[in-house]
Image (tube, rainbow, N blue to C red; front, side):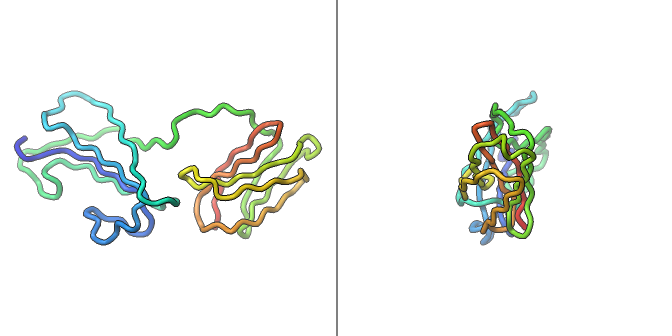
Length: 176
């Protein structure tokens, strides 16, 4: 209608994040924006928008604003209906042989790996990734019932992958 337009804007950020950015842009990890077409949309439409990354690192928060109007000002009679908003991270299914009898947890800035039957495994490789998929640490170990791997990582969520000739074990971990 006239000067109105719909928009969905999402930022992944650390600390404080605002729209308009008002001095918080240095905290923005990534951003995705979708502008609706200028003509009226009369039926359900699926859209997909990739993130543009400004910084590497792990985001702490997601800020999503859905609006019609002309940005920050209302336009009389403007309407928008939003349904089924979904954030999909790495939607590709990975087929892998899962290592049985392996578990891990974090304790005192270390990753503790428990192995039920160490004699069933050859050399183990552990790799830690941030949530953007960047490899941060890679180590090799000889199997034993309990392995303690000290890590020097900031507080946050990570992905830990353990690999052996027998398969792969992948888990999310949280470093405090």
